[in-house]
Length: 198
Length: 174
Image 1 (cartoon, each protein chain N blue to C red):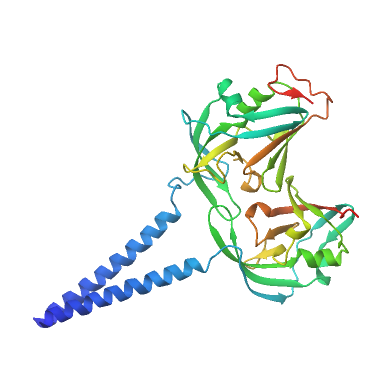
Image 2: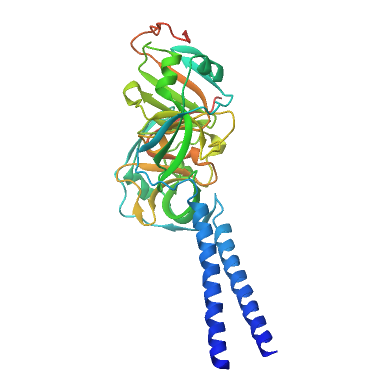
């Protein structure tokens, strides 16, 4: 009888320990995977929807063929749409799915320079890093985002260029300046642009 | 009385196991602090990527894979914060400082490392430290077949350049 009790006690102890270990592992895994319940493939965008989230205050200097300032007021005055979406990003180690909030860069271009010409556009970060895209490389999946899983990616008051169709190394955090090149026209044939020609 | 003793023993066992487990998990996490290079030692490398990195600006030339034979190669464990997680990997690479010494690039104020994807990162003289590496292998495998990759283990991941295409060097003004 006593032996039976001891065996039950040992089994109970093992069970409690197993549950404790399981809980710790489950909690840690849950923390690691927070924000990535979906498992999208690289370049995939899902659940894209317009939201009424307020844009943060930000300022991006526009330079080159067109000069000016891109800020919250310019976008709001021109009826910019804010989107939320999930995207699968290749960060060089893994393909991770996160939830983003931001604006489509094609919409921003429409507001900034409308149908004025340019051949290349450069995105300069507050960090010593910049990236150039040719006009043809600007796909519909390029966004200026201000939140990843509900938090700023890096610093408050800055937008991050998120190029979903490219590896994350082609995204630029804390965009400080956008530079336009227009090798076809020295005057950047602006037609109704919200920016000034050089 | 005996039962009470038994319960005490069981409770102590549970507490000890949970404490031990927590200590192990905590230790594992704290050993992954970013920006650390560990177990660095000189090594040799036979299977190099067939890279051709263009040197531009105030110094001109080409940096190619046969040059690596004349430069010290290191292997080491290092941690990198990729923006999502802190990853610990085993790398093989060469110090940028050693490569510059071999290329006789000794007087510079700024270097722009440009990737083939047109991402550029600007380094000032002081930014290039002993922790700035051209990495060739990660966990025993070539990172790339035909290019070098730049990682500054002591800096933010925004300083890293994948698929290095060119290095533009600006001399320090006299």
